[in-house]
Length: 400
Ligand SMILES: *Cc1c(COP(=O)(O)O)cnc(C)c1O
Image 1 (tube, rainbow, N blue to C red):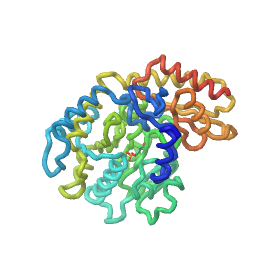
Image 2 (image 1 turned 90 degrees about the vertical axis):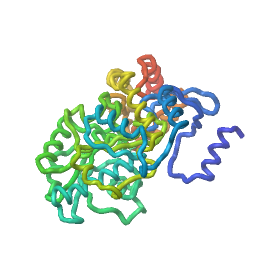
Image 3 (image 1 turned 45 degrees about the horizontal axis):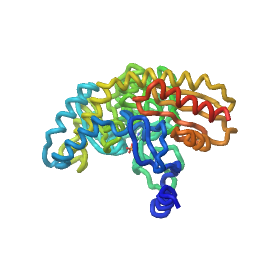
Image 4 (image 1 turned 30 degrees about the horizontal axis):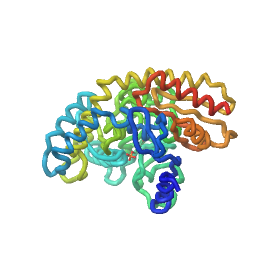
C-alpha cells in the first residue's frame, strides 16, 4: 500500500468524518502551487477558502513568523505585548476603523460581533433586556458554533444540534424590501456576507447593499458585514463593501489576515459598538497574541506592498472573461468578482464533484460547492500565464 493510501485510510479510521475531502494528500506549497505526497504539482484554485490569498508559504510572512516565534509567542491578555498596538495601528490605518478586537477563528469574530451588538442594543439603543434581534440572510455561512448554526438555513449545518440560540430573523439574501420589513424597534444589527461564498458565490444585485446601508442608518441598526472570505483583496478591492461605496459599522475579517499561517481574525468597528465591552466581558487566551499579531502585520504589508488587491481585480476580470468564452452545454452560469469565481453546472451534468476530480487529474485543485457549482479562487498572486493554463484545463474538462 502506498504512503498516500495509508494516510487516507488512517484519517478515515481515526478521524471524525465531518469533512469529505478530495483524495489528494498535500505535502508542500509555494505561491499558487501545491504538491502531493507523490510529487505531483497542482495549481490551487481554492486557497484554503481564501485564507492563502498571499500564496502558499509566502517567504516574508514565513520570516516574520519564525522571527517572532523565536522571541515571544503568547502572553495572554493578562499582560501587554509589543506587537498588538502595532497591529491595531496598521489595521486602523488600512481600513479606517476606530476600534479593533482580535480573535482567532472567523466564527469567533462572528460570535464577538453578535455579543457586542446585542450589548450595544441594550445600553445604547435602549432595547428591552433579552429582546434584541439580529437580521440574517438565507443561505448564509458564518461559521460552525452553536449560536451561528442557530441561524443557518442549511439543514446539514443545523440538524440535530438544537436547542438553538434565539434572537435572529432570517430574510432572503438580496431582497432589500424583505430586509426593510424585518426591521422593528428591537432590531440591533444585521449580519450579511457582501457576496455569499459557501452558498456558491452568490452576488447580490447592484444597489442592494447600498439600500441595506441606508435602512440600517435610518433605523439605528448596526450593519455587520462578514468579510472573512470576501475581504483582504479576494474580490478585487481590499473590502467587498467598496464595490458599493458603503461602510459597514462592524467588519469581520479572518482567513487571509494571516496569509494562512495561523488562525487570526478581527472585529473592526467604530468606537460605539466595541466600546460597550468592559474588562472581563469578553476575551480569548490566544486572541491578540504576539505571534498572531506579527504574522498578521506582515500578511497585510505583503498584500498591499505587492499589489495583490490590484492583481486580483485584473486577473479576476481576465479569468471571468475566459470562463465566459467556454462554449460548453453543461454550464448554466459563470459569475465572479475579482478572484472569487464560480462555474455553475446544469443539474443534468451530474454534480460538480466529478468535474473537480477530472480537474485534479489535470493538475488543478478546485472544490465543488452546493452540488452543482465549481468554485475557483486561486491565490491573488496568480499570473496571466497561470490563468491561461487553468482555463485550458477547465475548458478541456467542461467540453468532455
Ligand atoms: C470561513 C468563514 C467563516 C468562518 O471562519 P472560520 O475561521 O472557519 O471559523 C465565517 N464567515 C465566512 C463568510 C466565511 O467564509
